[in-house]
Image (spheres, rainbow, N blue to C red):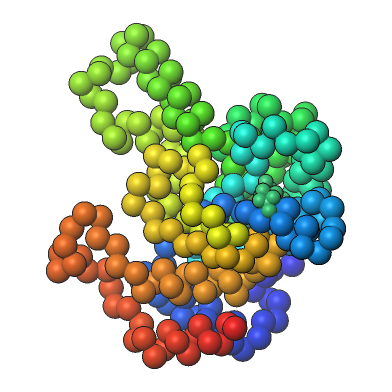
Length: 277
Ligand code: FPP
């Protein structure tokens, strides 16, 4: 089913319209989806129920990004450090990922979403690896939202891996050390196909990057909310986007030097954000 045919409330419709028309929308949004465990604990539920509810937030946020024309969404779904969690929790997360792809692939494809992954994905169970590859292959030619799942991912791992390949290419004579620029480093990272993130959202109130996109996040705007990931849905994403459109990104320049298109008047912003409450 095409997401554009689904009915939405008039408030959401109006906010989507404002965001779509904004010249200040981020191209690339990334999210550190934190707080699933706590969400379950406060409800006296087992942790895996938090992950299950977190998957519903994934569905909601992917659709919401696609509907306002975000080009790239990167979700930190499983860090390289997450392998240290108890085996039953790891198994549950893997099965959740598999069932997300099984259930959602047709709909993602129908809505022009391109699926990619970053991370040490050969460490994933065979079944998960296979369905991921199927999703990547099937959606490869789509040119709507690029949804990247960071799986078994660590930014330091990717930087280390890139450095090894760079060193090998220098040894093979393919690259000379004098030609090594920041751009070259970006090109050797697994994230080379995406622009740097403009906005990184982190839920559950923790103010850190936790080994996520460390090189790429150099100029990203950070948006931290106390909400736990399973409570974070489309309207919360729109709230973050509205706040982002009001920020001034200077990239080291002065305020007078930057011109990023007109911001919406403060009164319009307040009205829109109130409508999201
Ligand atoms: C962090 O919460 C979340 C994770 C380690 C996993 C994220 C997974 C999902 C949102 C569901 C499945 C994802 C996809 C892409 C289908 P936490 O467990 O660390 O929470 P806590 O800090 O409260 O314990």
